[in-house]
Length: 412
Image (tube, rainbow, N blue to C red):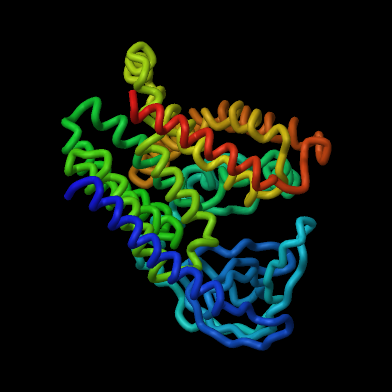
């Protein structure tokens, strides 16, 4: 197919998608405050336990997200099917955004996740392994970084993550999948032909999604990443973009509410960055050779690319907008790929032979302590480092600069 036909097809599909999303936005009606609602759902993440009950985020029948505070009993777990009945209420954030919540609705457990379920058992074993091997903060940080599993951590440290703009590090976002895919491709191409490395990476992404518990954001990103990798097997960068566009088109057309989904935004933009922005590290032969020869060079380059292309999204959606967040991200995010590698190997080893996995997990402690120290140091500065909102003009200017860089790379 000629480039002109491809451009025309993309333009036509974009118009169709715009009409579909516009229709959804015009017809979507959030539930009014104090609306009574009863529905059934399956828990897609592990509820957070506290002395006041169990807290979890759910999707309402109209695709609206809601935070639910359950009573302490019966204890709920990831994968459980529940029926609940209660009132939809709202509270306003300091930025003026309305957040829906249900406070202690009546609920009943329809079906408990089977203890014999392989995914469920693997997930619980991984959580138990890290909780028994590391301290509370270190364990929660490692589980969040590697698998996007949200475990209880000290409130002060959680607040500091929010203040420093690093809350995205422990979020179950599709960017985790993108980074895993990038790491695997970079690593496997050292030992195998690129075609075989791409095939093995597809299986690696599936296995990572399994370990992460097949959370919705992870599954969507895995589908997107796998389609892009299949396109890359055809041997053309444009095919990879068409695979990404096709995956995004199908997902949004089926579920237009994804335009608001942070995990979808992160995974789409991070994958786009790896296709078009990552080659900037290959413009210099010396830099490319250095990255390939160093142990973590490729992984750090992948992380920098993913973070650079998604920075405005991260600043807008995760907590406060820290004036120092770019500096803090630069200081800390180089540790993320290393922690993901160590954490992944530790989890695998721990599932097979726990003492060996524990020794591997201990290797991450210096980096985890470093991460905590930086977060606590900058977080203690408080509101001095934050602003109320990230202006749209700054985000637009940022992406225009990146687009210019991408065009420059393509010409090179």
